[in-house]
Length: 332
Ligand SMILES: *Cc1c(COP(=O)(O)O)cnc(C)c1O
Ligand code: SF4
Figure 1 (cartoon, rainbow, N blue to C red):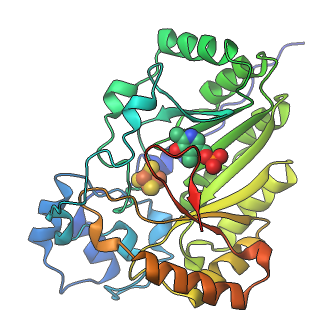
Figure 2: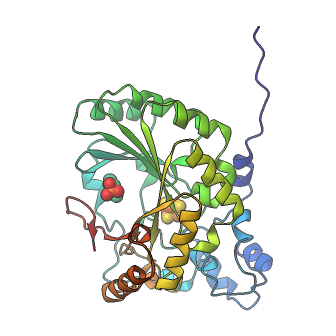
Figure 3: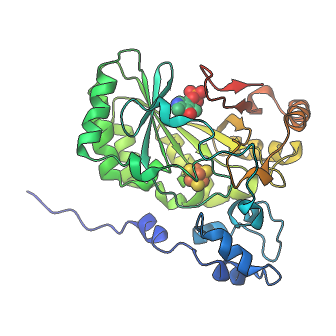
Protein backbone atom coordinates (compact mmCIF):
# COMPACT_ATOMS: atom_id res chain seq x y z
CA UNK A 1 0.00 0.00 0.00
CA UNK A 2 1.26 3.42 -0.86
CA UNK A 3 0.98 6.14 1.73
CA UNK A 4 2.12 9.64 1.01
CA UNK A 5 4.87 10.81 3.32
CA UNK A 6 3.91 13.40 5.90
CA UNK A 7 5.05 16.94 5.30
CA UNK A 8 7.98 17.47 7.62
CA UNK A 9 8.75 21.11 8.34
CA UNK A 10 12.30 21.91 7.33
CA UNK A 11 13.49 23.64 10.47
CA UNK A 12 16.77 24.87 9.14
CA UNK A 13 15.02 26.59 6.26
CA UNK A 14 12.95 28.48 8.80
CA UNK A 15 16.14 29.50 10.59
CA UNK A 16 17.61 30.71 7.30
CA UNK A 17 14.50 32.69 6.52
CA UNK A 18 14.83 34.52 9.83
CA UNK A 19 18.47 35.62 9.87
CA UNK A 20 19.50 38.87 11.50
CA UNK A 21 20.45 41.24 8.71
CA UNK A 22 19.70 44.60 10.30
CA UNK A 23 22.65 46.08 12.25
CA UNK A 24 20.28 48.02 14.52
CA UNK A 25 18.59 44.81 15.55
CA UNK A 26 21.93 43.13 16.20
CA UNK A 27 23.11 45.98 18.39
CA UNK A 28 19.80 46.16 20.26
CA UNK A 29 19.66 42.43 20.92
CA UNK A 30 23.19 42.44 22.29
CA UNK A 31 22.85 45.68 24.24
CA UNK A 32 25.61 47.35 22.24
CA UNK A 33 24.50 50.93 22.59
CA UNK A 34 27.84 52.65 22.25
CA UNK A 35 28.77 51.40 18.77
CA UNK A 36 28.74 53.74 15.78
CA UNK A 37 25.78 52.39 13.86
CA UNK A 38 26.18 54.67 10.87
CA UNK A 39 29.58 53.19 10.20
CA UNK A 40 28.33 49.66 10.68
CA UNK A 41 25.60 50.25 8.12
CA UNK A 42 28.02 51.74 5.64
CA UNK A 43 30.26 48.71 5.98
CA UNK A 44 27.30 46.39 5.37
CA UNK A 45 26.76 47.84 1.92
CA UNK A 46 29.75 45.93 0.54
CA UNK A 47 29.15 42.65 2.37
CA UNK A 48 25.82 42.47 4.22
CA UNK A 49 25.29 41.41 7.81
CA UNK A 50 23.98 37.84 8.12
CA UNK A 51 23.69 36.00 11.43
CA UNK A 52 21.49 33.10 12.59
CA UNK A 53 19.61 33.91 15.78
CA UNK A 54 20.90 30.85 17.60
CA UNK A 55 24.46 32.10 17.11
CA UNK A 56 23.59 35.19 19.13
CA UNK A 57 22.78 33.08 22.17
CA UNK A 58 26.46 32.14 22.17
CA UNK A 59 27.65 35.75 21.96
CA UNK A 60 28.24 37.55 25.24
CA UNK A 61 25.93 40.55 25.56
CA UNK A 62 27.26 44.09 25.92
CA UNK A 63 30.83 43.10 25.10
CA UNK A 64 32.13 44.71 21.89
CA UNK A 65 35.26 42.53 22.07
CA UNK A 66 33.47 39.19 22.31
CA UNK A 67 35.32 36.75 20.01
CA UNK A 68 32.10 35.52 18.41
CA UNK A 69 30.78 39.02 17.86
CA UNK A 70 34.01 40.12 16.18
CA UNK A 71 33.52 37.43 13.52
CA UNK A 72 30.18 38.84 12.42
CA UNK A 73 30.19 42.54 13.26
CA UNK A 74 30.91 44.82 10.29
CA UNK A 75 33.65 47.27 11.24
CA UNK A 76 34.95 50.39 9.54
CA UNK A 77 38.38 48.79 9.12
CA UNK A 78 36.82 46.74 6.33
CA UNK A 79 36.63 49.81 4.15
CA UNK A 80 40.39 50.31 4.25
CA UNK A 81 42.12 48.94 1.19
CA UNK A 82 45.80 48.11 1.46
CA UNK A 83 48.35 47.19 -1.19
CA UNK A 84 48.72 43.63 0.00
CA UNK A 85 44.99 42.97 -0.18
CA UNK A 86 43.44 41.61 -3.33
CA UNK A 87 39.99 40.79 -4.60
CA UNK A 88 40.91 37.20 -5.54
CA UNK A 89 43.95 36.45 -3.35
CA UNK A 90 44.22 32.83 -4.42
CA UNK A 91 43.90 33.61 -8.13
CA UNK A 92 41.37 30.83 -8.22
CA UNK A 93 39.75 31.64 -11.53
CA UNK A 94 42.68 30.23 -13.50
CA UNK A 95 42.21 26.81 -11.89
CA UNK A 96 38.65 26.46 -13.11
CA UNK A 97 38.61 24.16 -16.17
CA UNK A 98 34.80 24.05 -16.13
CA UNK A 99 32.40 26.47 -14.55
CA UNK A 100 31.82 25.80 -10.84
CA UNK A 101 34.82 23.47 -10.44
CA UNK A 102 38.34 24.18 -9.20
CA UNK A 103 41.09 21.69 -9.96
CA UNK A 104 44.22 22.91 -8.26
CA UNK A 105 45.70 19.94 -6.43
CA UNK A 106 46.38 16.38 -7.52
CA UNK A 107 43.59 13.88 -6.93
CA UNK A 108 40.87 16.21 -5.69
CA UNK A 109 38.53 18.74 -7.20
CA UNK A 110 36.49 21.38 -5.42
CA UNK A 111 32.96 22.21 -6.51
CA UNK A 112 31.57 25.63 -5.63
CA UNK A 113 28.06 24.41 -4.87
CA UNK A 114 26.22 27.22 -3.23
CA UNK A 115 26.88 30.90 -3.29
CA UNK A 116 25.27 31.66 0.01
CA UNK A 117 26.05 31.05 3.68
CA UNK A 118 24.00 31.12 6.86
CA UNK A 119 26.46 33.61 8.24
CA UNK A 120 28.71 36.25 6.81
CA UNK A 121 32.12 35.92 8.43
CA UNK A 122 33.83 39.26 8.11
CA UNK A 123 37.22 37.71 7.34
CA UNK A 124 35.90 35.55 4.52
CA UNK A 125 38.30 35.20 1.62
CA UNK A 126 35.42 34.51 -0.72
CA UNK A 127 33.69 37.80 0.04
CA UNK A 128 34.47 39.03 -3.47
CA UNK A 129 33.96 35.71 -5.21
CA UNK A 130 31.92 36.03 -8.42
CA UNK A 131 29.30 33.51 -7.32
CA UNK A 132 26.93 34.64 -10.03
CA UNK A 133 29.36 33.38 -12.68
CA UNK A 134 29.81 30.08 -10.86
CA UNK A 135 26.17 29.08 -10.62
CA UNK A 136 25.68 25.42 -11.47
CA UNK A 137 22.70 24.59 -13.66
CA UNK A 138 21.92 21.27 -15.37
CA UNK A 139 24.36 21.88 -18.23
CA UNK A 140 27.19 22.91 -15.92
CA UNK A 141 26.57 19.93 -13.67
CA UNK A 142 26.83 17.57 -16.64
CA UNK A 143 30.06 19.29 -17.70
CA UNK A 144 31.44 18.82 -14.18
CA UNK A 145 30.51 15.11 -14.18
CA UNK A 146 32.11 14.66 -17.61
CA UNK A 147 35.30 16.38 -16.46
CA UNK A 148 35.62 14.17 -13.37
CA UNK A 149 34.72 10.99 -15.25
CA UNK A 150 37.41 11.71 -17.85
CA UNK A 151 40.23 12.03 -15.29
CA UNK A 152 40.87 8.83 -13.35
CA UNK A 153 43.47 10.55 -11.16
CA UNK A 154 40.61 12.27 -9.29
CA UNK A 155 39.60 10.23 -6.23
CA UNK A 156 37.94 12.90 -4.11
CA UNK A 157 35.30 15.53 -4.68
CA UNK A 158 34.95 18.46 -2.30
CA UNK A 159 31.61 20.20 -1.93
CA UNK A 160 32.42 23.77 -1.00
CA UNK A 161 30.90 27.18 -1.48
CA UNK A 162 29.69 29.46 0.07
CA UNK A 163 28.25 26.76 2.22
CA UNK A 164 27.25 23.58 0.34
CA UNK A 165 24.81 22.63 3.12
CA UNK A 166 22.79 25.69 2.16
CA UNK A 167 21.58 23.54 -0.73
CA UNK A 168 18.61 21.25 -0.16
CA UNK A 169 19.14 17.61 0.74
CA UNK A 170 17.23 16.59 -2.38
CA UNK A 171 19.73 18.41 -4.55
CA UNK A 172 22.75 17.19 -2.57
CA UNK A 173 21.47 13.60 -2.62
CA UNK A 174 20.96 13.72 -6.40
CA UNK A 175 24.42 15.20 -6.99
CA UNK A 176 26.20 12.75 -4.74
CA UNK A 177 24.32 9.85 -6.37
CA UNK A 178 25.58 11.06 -9.77
CA UNK A 179 29.12 11.24 -8.42
CA UNK A 180 28.86 7.75 -6.92
CA UNK A 181 28.50 6.30 -10.41
CA UNK A 182 32.03 7.43 -11.34
CA UNK A 183 34.09 4.35 -10.47
CA UNK A 184 37.41 6.05 -9.64
CA UNK A 185 35.88 8.34 -7.00
CA UNK A 186 36.44 7.19 -3.42
CA UNK A 187 35.58 10.10 -1.17
CA UNK A 188 33.14 12.95 -0.86
CA UNK A 189 34.32 15.78 1.32
CA UNK A 190 31.97 18.51 2.56
CA UNK A 191 33.42 21.84 3.67
CA UNK A 192 30.77 23.47 5.83
CA UNK A 193 30.20 25.85 8.70
CA UNK A 194 26.50 24.99 8.82
CA UNK A 195 26.44 22.35 11.63
CA UNK A 196 28.21 24.85 13.88
CA UNK A 197 26.05 27.80 12.84
CA UNK A 198 22.68 26.03 12.54
CA UNK A 199 22.82 22.65 14.31
CA UNK A 200 19.25 21.96 13.09
CA UNK A 201 20.82 21.52 9.65
CA UNK A 202 21.89 18.04 10.76
CA UNK A 203 18.49 16.50 10.06
CA UNK A 204 17.39 13.00 9.10
CA UNK A 205 17.46 13.78 5.37
CA UNK A 206 21.12 14.76 5.55
CA UNK A 207 21.94 11.69 7.60
CA UNK A 208 20.05 9.51 5.10
CA UNK A 209 21.78 10.53 1.89
CA UNK A 210 25.24 10.64 3.43
CA UNK A 211 24.88 7.11 4.75
CA UNK A 212 23.35 5.75 1.54
CA UNK A 213 26.06 6.77 -0.93
CA UNK A 214 28.93 4.50 -1.88
CA UNK A 215 31.60 7.16 -1.23
CA UNK A 216 33.29 7.66 2.12
CA UNK A 217 32.08 10.93 3.56
CA UNK A 218 34.43 13.36 5.28
CA UNK A 219 33.10 16.57 6.74
CA UNK A 220 35.44 19.46 7.37
CA UNK A 221 33.74 21.83 9.78
CA UNK A 222 34.71 25.41 10.39
CA UNK A 223 34.90 26.71 13.93
CA UNK A 224 37.24 29.32 15.33
CA UNK A 225 36.39 29.45 19.00
CA UNK A 226 35.20 27.02 21.70
CA UNK A 227 32.28 29.32 22.58
CA UNK A 228 30.75 28.49 19.20
CA UNK A 229 30.25 24.87 20.23
CA UNK A 230 27.35 24.69 22.67
CA UNK A 231 25.46 21.52 23.57
CA UNK A 232 23.15 21.80 20.54
CA UNK A 233 26.16 21.81 18.25
CA UNK A 234 27.68 18.93 20.19
CA UNK A 235 24.53 16.85 19.71
CA UNK A 236 24.54 17.58 15.99
CA UNK A 237 28.20 16.60 15.67
CA UNK A 238 27.58 13.33 17.50
CA UNK A 239 24.78 12.51 15.05
CA UNK A 240 27.15 13.02 12.13
CA UNK A 241 29.87 10.95 13.74
CA UNK A 242 27.47 8.16 14.69
CA UNK A 243 26.41 8.13 11.06
CA UNK A 244 29.93 7.15 10.04
CA UNK A 245 31.11 10.56 8.84
CA UNK A 246 34.73 11.43 9.62
CA UNK A 247 34.81 14.86 11.23
CA UNK A 248 37.64 17.39 10.91
CA UNK A 249 37.78 21.08 11.65
CA UNK A 250 39.47 24.00 10.01
CA UNK A 251 39.87 27.42 11.56
CA UNK A 252 41.27 30.74 10.52
CA UNK A 253 43.84 32.45 12.75
CA UNK A 254 42.19 35.78 13.55
CA UNK A 255 43.60 38.72 15.43
CA UNK A 256 41.63 39.51 18.58
CA UNK A 257 39.55 36.32 18.21
CA UNK A 258 41.75 33.26 18.57
CA UNK A 259 45.34 34.46 18.22
CA UNK A 260 46.64 32.86 21.38
CA UNK A 261 47.50 29.34 22.43
CA UNK A 262 45.03 29.11 25.36
CA UNK A 263 42.07 29.93 23.16
CA UNK A 264 43.17 27.46 20.50
CA UNK A 265 43.83 24.76 23.09
CA UNK A 266 40.29 25.21 24.42
CA UNK A 267 38.87 25.06 20.91
CA UNK A 268 40.65 21.84 20.00
CA UNK A 269 39.87 20.18 23.35
CA UNK A 270 36.22 21.09 22.87
CA UNK A 271 36.19 19.80 19.30
CA UNK A 272 37.65 16.50 20.44
CA UNK A 273 34.91 16.17 23.08
CA UNK A 274 32.49 16.41 20.16
CA UNK A 275 34.22 13.79 18.03
CA UNK A 276 36.15 16.19 15.80
CA UNK A 277 39.88 16.30 15.06
CA UNK A 278 41.71 19.47 14.05
CA UNK A 279 42.82 19.75 10.43
CA UNK A 280 44.06 23.15 9.27
CA UNK A 281 44.53 26.47 10.99
CA UNK A 282 44.68 28.86 8.07
CA UNK A 283 46.64 32.04 7.97
CA UNK A 284 44.35 34.79 6.72
CA UNK A 285 44.31 35.13 2.96
CA UNK A 286 45.16 38.71 2.07
CA UNK A 287 41.70 39.73 0.95
CA UNK A 288 40.58 43.31 0.73
CA UNK A 289 38.41 44.31 3.69
CA UNK A 290 39.81 41.73 6.11
CA UNK A 291 43.40 42.78 6.70
CA UNK A 292 42.67 43.97 10.25
CA UNK A 293 42.36 40.28 11.21
CA UNK A 294 45.86 39.46 10.04
CA UNK A 295 48.33 37.77 12.41
CA UNK A 296 52.02 37.87 11.44
CA UNK A 297 53.89 34.69 10.52
CA UNK A 298 56.28 35.20 13.47
CA UNK A 299 53.39 35.47 15.90
CA UNK A 300 51.75 32.40 14.37
CA UNK A 301 54.93 30.39 14.82
CA UNK A 302 55.11 31.41 18.47
CA UNK A 303 51.47 30.38 18.95
CA UNK A 304 52.23 27.03 17.36
CA UNK A 305 55.18 26.43 19.70
CA UNK A 306 53.03 27.32 22.72
CA UNK A 307 50.17 25.13 21.53
CA UNK A 308 52.45 22.14 20.99
CA UNK A 309 53.62 22.47 24.57
CA UNK A 310 50.01 22.32 25.79
CA UNK A 311 48.31 19.60 23.75
CA UNK A 312 48.87 16.09 22.46
CA UNK A 313 50.16 16.15 18.89
CA UNK A 314 46.85 14.98 17.42
CA UNK A 315 45.05 18.04 18.80
CA UNK A 316 47.43 20.53 17.17
CA UNK A 317 46.14 21.68 13.76
CA UNK A 318 48.48 22.08 10.80
CA UNK A 319 49.17 25.77 10.34
CA UNK A 320 48.52 26.44 6.67
CA UNK A 321 49.22 29.12 4.12
CA UNK A 322 47.72 28.97 0.69
CA UNK A 323 49.99 30.11 -2.08
CA UNK A 324 48.45 30.61 -5.49
CA UNK A 325 50.81 28.33 -7.42
CA UNK A 326 51.89 25.70 -4.88
CA UNK A 327 51.10 22.00 -5.46
CA UNK A 328 49.45 21.81 -2.05
CA UNK A 329 48.71 24.07 0.88
CA UNK A 330 51.94 25.05 2.58
CA UNK A 331 52.06 23.98 6.22
CA UNK A 332 54.34 24.77 9.12
C1 LIG B 1 42.10 23.71 0.00
C2 LIG B 1 41.74 23.21 -1.32
C3 LIG B 1 41.63 21.84 -1.56
C4 LIG B 1 41.84 20.81 -0.50
O1 LIG B 1 43.16 20.74 -0.07
P1 LIG B 1 43.53 19.67 1.06
O2 LIG B 1 44.95 19.95 1.39
O3 LIG B 1 43.30 18.33 0.48
O4 LIG B 1 42.61 19.92 2.20
C5 LIG B 1 41.32 21.42 -2.83
N1 LIG B 1 41.12 22.30 -3.83
C6 LIG B 1 41.20 23.63 -3.63
C7 LIG B 1 40.99 24.55 -4.78
C8 LIG B 1 41.51 24.13 -2.37
O5 LIG B 1 41.57 25.45 -2.17
S1 SF4 C 1 30.75 30.35 6.19
FE1 SF4 C 1 32.73 30.16 5.10
S2 SF4 C 1 32.29 30.83 2.98
FE2 SF4 C 1 30.59 31.54 4.30
S3 SF4 C 1 31.13 33.63 4.90
FE3 SF4 C 1 31.88 32.25 6.53
S4 SF4 C 1 34.02 31.80 5.95
FE4 SF4 C 1 32.98 32.63 4.13
